[in-house]
Image 1 (cartoon, one colour):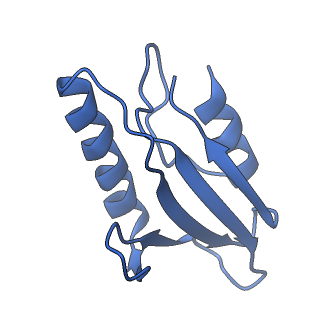
Image 2 (image 1 turned 90 degrees about the horizontal axis):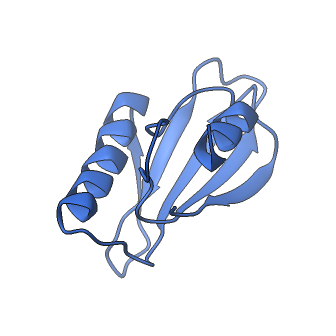
Image 3 (image 1 turned 180 degrees about the horizontal axis):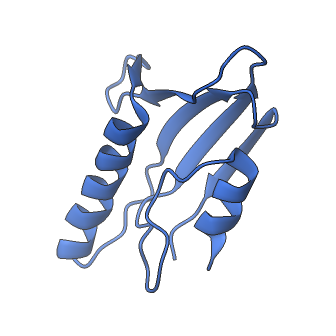
Length: 103
């Protein structure tokens, strides 16, 4: 396994497809925040508009969004330098910001 598997080991759960080949086609900036009372991961997506709004999403919805972006770029045989920014609050993750890079 690659970088995504390491990122998910730090987070304590899977959020992105892990497996053979290039799966991550956009950088994913992950702002992890330890929150002692958070039994399930709370996920927020920074919207791609210019307003910097956060949208709370369920973990499955966040996974679908990331997978659809990766699939769209794979179909175009491309990558995109604009990062997907997510914030995760969870009792099992450290206070840490990391970037899962393409490749």
